[in-house]
Image 1 (cartoon, one colour):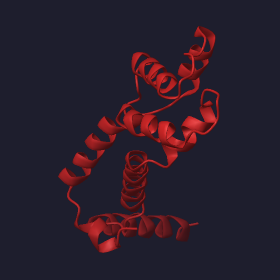
Image 2 (spheres, one colour):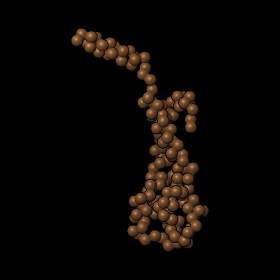
Image 3 (cartoon, rainbow, N blue to C red):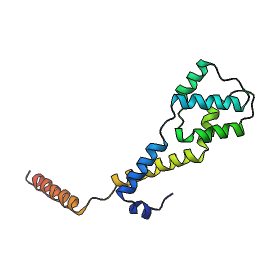
Image 4 (cartoon, rainbow, N blue to C red):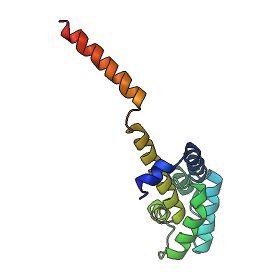
Length: 145
């Protein structure tokens, strides 16, 4: 977790850079990229490529960022022990353990924290004066009843 002093020290340019990086690294893999990954995994595990209907289900259900495909593929080939094609759950489990995916989660959490901090910040001096003026007007209005 980042100390609050570091959160305060981040400039708008830093936040913009983090948002750009997050947008880039969390871009979902294309249908073609997932199809290539599935064929590569099948070859690596000495299994037949899944049927077209199965590939369509995988493509519909898998939400793997393109930046994580290589790590997921490598992780499956290193860990998968069964003589069957990896399930969507298998692929998702490997995805969630990759450093690339953890970087995406960390950036999302940090940007959410910064956004929440920005929303919860104390009002400025001008905002406090404006609020005070409105409260005084409200009190004067209520006192006239």
